[in-house]
Image (tube, one colour):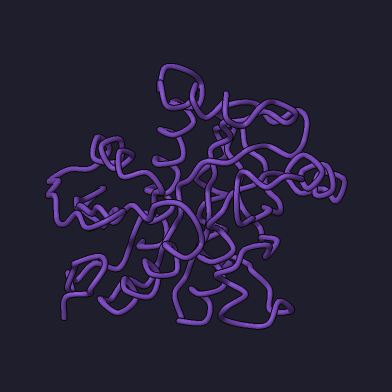
Length: 240
């Protein structure tokens, strides 16, 4: 049955790359063969292709945990069993450079979506097999493995204080979707993990860095290419 938001029916595909930005699918397509555009409704743009003979679905999820929740729910209903987020984040530790990859070993559940599903005591953690495949695939690139802070909004009044607090706790970076992906995926029996491309160095202005990132002519664009490659390699390892 065609799902109401993503406008997709069963495709016989197990693996999905989830990007926030619909435009990122153009970058994903460069690393796939036999690419076919599928649907584009609201924030949910999708295409399919093959990587080393493996069929892969790529779909954008927009911004925030609520959109991610819709994506996970509807993709799981059409047979997707493994999902890797390839997103962007802001660093919460010094020494994490623009274009470095952050691999989420877990996420702070500071979002509304995951908390709507289950008590906050339930952990937001990736699937062990998927995480292991990502770690093997990312070895050649600068990367950091640890906890992500999934928050609800960029523009809260005490954002700087929140960043300082979680930085002191050793959290590596901040995004808005990983906790929802991990929690809802776990509840629905879907294997999930999150790879984040750092686009903001710790202590820098987020809005300025995001504007620079949108230009796509800097190290963050290289990091974007790397996270796509790493996720696809992880799918290949999982399928072997």
